Amino acid sequence: DSKTKFFIISFTSDWLYPTSENKEIVIALNAAGADVGFIEITSDKGHDSFLLDVPDFLNSVRNFLKANY
Image 1: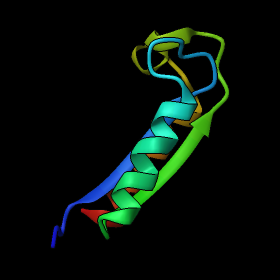
Image 2 (image 1 turned 120 degrees about the vertical axis):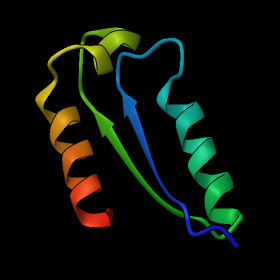
Image 3 (image 1 turned 135 degrees about the vertical axis):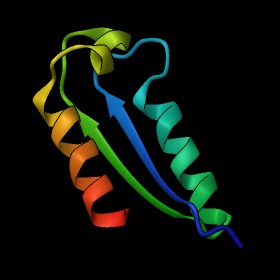
């Protein structure tokens, strides 16, 4: 029984880890009884979206951390 909270973030243009694979992770975590959240963010920056200034990404991470820690 894990008390870890998972937050899976997917970018629509990520070719390295596409949304379909991230959704499989969410399904597996849910099946294991984990507390998991998921968000898909529209971006044209590809896999490196998380390194760039994507406001939806930054706001989502900030909100998750504030709500959980």
